[in-house]
Length: 501
Image (cartoon, rainbow, N blue to C red; front, side):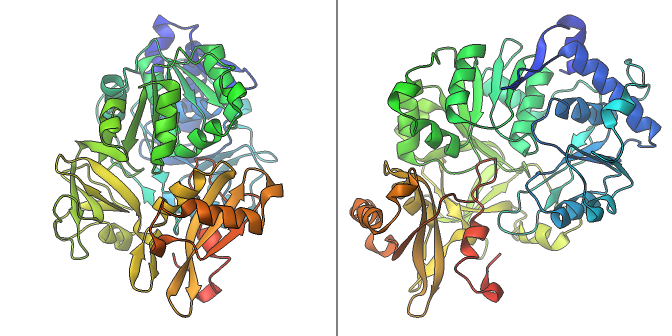
């Protein structure tokens, strides 16, 4: 299970194809270029356990560099290109990366955080690696990703797992999960529509390379383009987030019907709670092939649910396949089925936040169970239902209100493209519910649409949850992975000293 093996057996098979540019990298090319990269990293003095950082868009060189680090036994930290220079410098310095590879110019504070910089105006990684041989380095050993949480609710947190022991081509838990649960294998063609610096696209594409399949990597997501790629490349597997689903469902019906999607065997999604109406519409459109999993970059646990199970339990994210779900109260004590509380995993893989013992301690209760900060409940059969993130909770008049349910109801309106529901300061209630709406057509923004949405919500959500204020914006701040940067939305409403993490 390694691209170097597939380079021997199917050398001309595409390991990945960039879209829409169409640039193709075969397994032979990936093997040779990653070997050259590993030689270069060794020549720079990097040894097993050292780290490199990548700050790249979805670029054809991305996997060549990542697999070079993996073959050299290094940690590779992939950084969002949307972050500000001080945030990037923090991650580079905190991760201990000795090398930074970037396709964009590097600010002084970023270059000061690292020994060696490959970037425009600095050194050229691709040019320098060309001088090295294409055979493997003598001391190949498996490396590992060291990724950072997205930081949507505060400073990014690094997760530095132990380096794998054993052979370079060993499998891992995610690859085995994909193989056994989603039927992934060498005959697959996988559509990856999200930024590769995010944990899920990176890890799933690398799982495809371990198995010998082909990944179609979108350089930037576009709903109609995704459908066209499924048809053109006869895609068998695809990973999405709920925002992708919403964008595709908002396409005109004639556009959606234009493409042949019959090759799809599995479409799975994660990263955020999916509105029930949205998922029902996707299953009605694609058929019973829509799967879901719930996990985090920390990989402390994982749940999954298939389409038939989900139709019987709409809204669930499934039962645990890694770890054991525990729903706990504020004191960290287990709650019975049906009661809402913090989601913990017991008996799951251990993790720590790098250089941050306080955040590590905050992620555990006195039982030693770990949490990502999400809230939900389980039913009597152990199926998990997400409510929201604890940090997004609104307290209005002493009542706890979770925005996700309100957002799900609003985004179902045909004139709404996106929505964020937040709590804003209120002298009487402490916080009031505010809906910040991105309309599909900006010309619709205004009092008439606000009134229409207010009427739309009658009967769909309880009165206490009804937004007391509806504002409109041309576009909401979303990470390219689909995660809403709710902190940025809230900052418009809270005085600077009162903005909550």
